[in-house]
Image 1 (cartoon, helix red, strand yellow):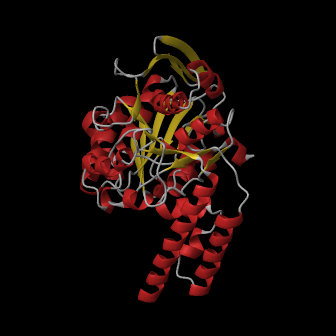
Image 2 (cartoon, rainbow, N blue to C red; image 1 turned 90 degrees about the vertical axis):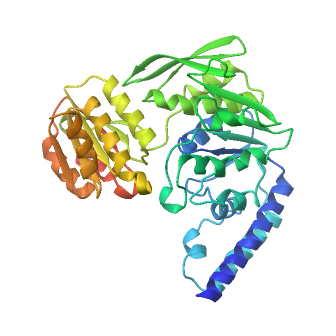
Image 3 (spheres, one colour; image 1 turned 120 degrees about the vertical axis):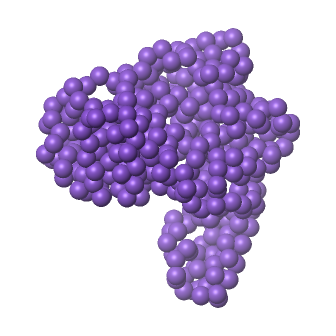
Length: 412
């Protein structure tokens, strides 16, 4: 076991060297995207804009750690072999593949867009051994990963902000001016700064919500005195953060406001990130099953509140990785659900805390299930025409199984 750990560490040491050498050969401009939410959606939105002018590369979903970035950039699409309990021989094959790719790959790209994630303290230190972004976007900070060493939002911010202070004077920081943590960096950094926000009149890029319906958003943006309106087939005003961050990133690369907005009007959110789906018995599902945190769940419930339906169902899976904050946060979300929904379906080990908050605010009906499969089977016979279901929860709860069961295409 000790020998395997040693060789695994040695393999990754060389993979870091190979990755840095490959980037030295290609010399792309590196755009990093991090934050506690909206990283993947921002990566996809920015990639759509930049692809209109540049040859781009973006890392794959979940390849956002130090190891993942190395594997992805060296085109080694097999994390299981390198991270699992496999032979030294198998690791050496991966090392040879990385070496060959670093030296002889004919890949060329102008812009490298990297989603950067963390699980525990000092992860950013490891990532900075591999890449140094020229442009760094931070979407915002909220509570997650508590069970892996972060005790507060401030701890998460202290880790992620290392990416900002790694920027040189020619770099650019793209920051959420509405976020109480991220905004503190605006006056401290020596590099160029572009900040964005809906609630900050001093932000470089501002947004004003004009319309928020089940068909999408209409938003007016303002930058340096110029205004432009965009219509987006995106559900939920909280996704304006994605649009603001992507447009700000494009502005940093000399796109005009009008150019960026026009391209983004064709943008669609990645799968399971607030997608409208027709369900059985003519119900409508809002599929936001990719993940959940207190902030994103509250925002989703605000969307549910703003929409019209015969009956609104909040189908909520538990929020993982909240540590000692878990009970309190689930109760808070349960109270929010009581204001937004007519009925609560709570799923998972901590479903009772959702229900506790729900019962403190209302006397409306609720149901609790140990897992998403049980909830799916119940809802299959329970939903009816005119129902609007918000379905959301942490990835480990597998709330997407409910969407699959109720999807009218699945039934066919």
